[in-house]
Length: 441
Image (cartoon, rainbow, N blue to C red; front, top):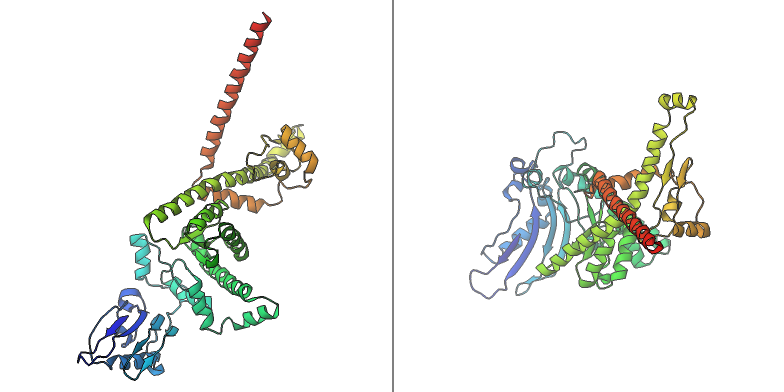
């Protein structure tokens, strides 16, 4: 609501500005109950009127009167900000009031939930509604999710408002201070908990949408906006501390941070690029995203090769067991063993023993080129790894598929590339032999 109030009698009073942002949803339109007083408020109010200079005082008293607010049982006032304005003998300073009035009702058994405009926004217009706010308890988000919210975004200003206007953080803060945390360290602990808990609440949406929605964003420190390396390190740290796949690391689109985005995305970390105010900068963000995905593809395919080998070993164990194989084994058959080949490392980010160390398991063969063999003999790690993390291998394999990478197509492409390479080598060696025979003659 933005209500500039002007004196209609021309007696020189200053313009008065009263701004508040309200969201009121009616039963008829959006599935929420609103009492008679609340039904007079439209969903989004943005009006301007001229009236008696003191009329706004009545409105102010009404909004701040507890009895009046008690009547707004089913209206959620997201935020209310009164900006400074003045009269001849009255001065009002800035005041912030957060989450006043009633709240949206949450259907705990999630049955008979009526469709709202947010559901229609997603289903009919294919736009995902996210909520740009967060405060404790994060369970307050449940009615928003019931009514169509599909994700949450945050920023330092949101946490400033949440922490400064609520005592819900005080207990954890006391423990953090008692444990010796400094101010910034305590801030991050508070934020990480909120983001983690919110990610868990939104996890069903993330899973059901196959990673399209259900995200929660958390911003790196704005003090790192011009620090490429610092942004990368903080993004990695936040992603690890929160420990949820559906977290967005929010990074500002400064020149230095755009370089960070590519690196962070290449590590498989989702990024929410922010502070984009012009088309050239947006294009730079797109390029950073595409570059990061390409690098991510290279990294993930390296890890994906290991994941696929682990799953191949699971298939091997399944196929060479049970009645069918047991009958053949009784007749003297021996198991077909898996052989790991081409174990030289192509990605310089990985150690030379990456493939050899990662594929150690019984009843298999590892054929090592010279570089890999030397490296393994010098500093290889002797440990059974082939079936140590099967669930992680399944996760990596499926995550790569979600990136749009089709495993059979990759297999066909590699077949053609390797056959082409071997054909060229075969032709070259034949030419070499032919030339040598000419010399001999």
